[in-house]
Length: 258
Image 1: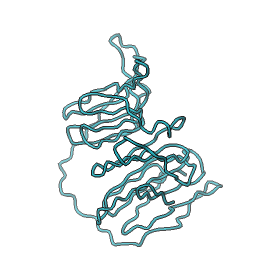
Image 2: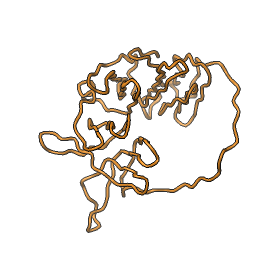
Image 3: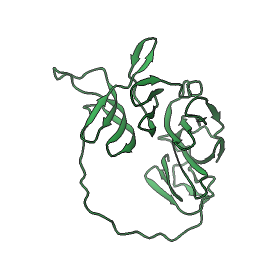
Image 4: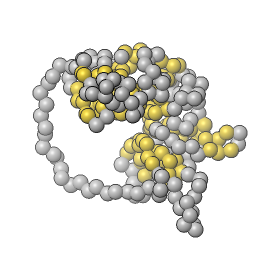
């Protein structure tokens, strides 16, 4: 069993646990959602929030057009997306294209940008000793159109890419899986394997590691302000393709509660 993603909308926390979706509504006091069975059986929900009435509203419009866009050729994959506006979207991963002779270009791209009319594939470079490296980018987070963070320790300021310290000391030898930040406060969280959570109170100027209480890989993190303008942040952890269980964490500034 694995927990793959979490997001918060007002008072609703949605957690995707493998192929099952768990929806929690209301004033949530959630410490741990589920534990996996060693035999691979179903998990048991051990704490939930109070139930509330939920009504499905009629759609406001049927004027939707879905368009499939193909980016890259064989072995290309996208891992994350940051939507700033309908005319400014960043998608990241590893993308391969054919060169002018029709052969596979071995130098991969690692991002694509939507400008409102078309996708442009981009190489986001991490510069090491004067040499650009275009490693696969696992995640992206945008505070704004001039403050965008990429998991390969690169920042976009609206004009150019430049190297940044994305909790490099904390994540040395540990893969980064996701980022989330609060534009109003400048807080930024980065999560990854082995239960690793890094926190910056000042848009990446300084970093500290938070004690997560788990060695599971933290797969996703998301948050939103609540009614009292207090930030609520949730993260989910699991080791993919295993039955080692899952963990759901609530994070209050620098305190992680399992």
